Image (tube, rainbow, N blue to C red; front, side):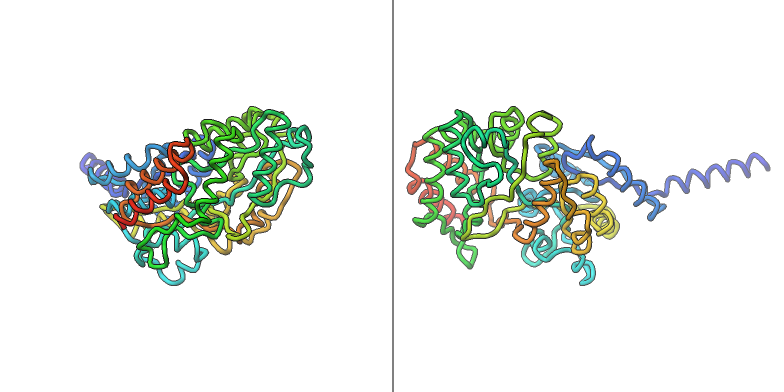
Length: 409
């Protein structure tokens, strides 16, 4: 009898253990720097949901889309996935994500603009997480060598371009490396107050004289050797490497990447100062890409998956994440008012956080939603590269892109 009782007890324990729901959430490139914070989130969610066993998986940014599509196709998707706004657009168009059902109170937790970024055709396809308005990290030593005043950095795109020319002419070093590879020129148009699509969203309109003039200004810098040759190939990655090596005077960056400079080259970090992103006065807006959490198609328990996404992006956890990163900002209203974001300091990381916090009012994710995005983006990228290489005039390149887009739109 005792043996039977013991067997029954062991079976009961085994059954209780087996009843735990296995959940997974994926993030983009946070390991190993933020392991402790992610593990804290796992433990806290399990504490609040004793029947759940939660697993965190970190995925490199360049592998996320394919890995998620494969998981959805196999019928074993994670419960919640961290995606950038542009990844979300692509995966919504491929039918890989579930719409969320948020109450009015849940919607009010987030700023309207970030929540709108994850809303497609009136369906909320994700909840916003963190973002960080761009700043300019600049090397005070190079400024002095070029005859520029480190206490008076460029405040507009126009004065930044002028400073970049002076730096190259006087020192032989590059002034800056603009983020113009891929489709980034679309964001520069909007920052300059220029439309990409007409008001109906059904027609591309970015081949006006103003658009041509803006692209031409970058083509001229590129053709005359004022910006690095691999700008169109390696973009931001190369810019960070050049700046850390002391070969670039200004780095247009999210403040989180100043940490990388600190880790890569302490001597360069020590002469780094931080200024606001130089706005184009006509636009007065800063493209600030958002990260969010989405729920993939085919999750077994959609309500639980949504609960997890909301937990990961609630006020408490967004503030905690910002305090750990020291350089990212919440997309929730309450957390953003915390005094933590107003604390300055002598180091470039602290300066970056303070400068970014003052720029949040200008921050907007300018990612656009349009059909056949992958195909149209390739047309845009290829033609801009042709203009940069001098294979086409800027007018011809923009006319060709607009023609191709409008045939598809």
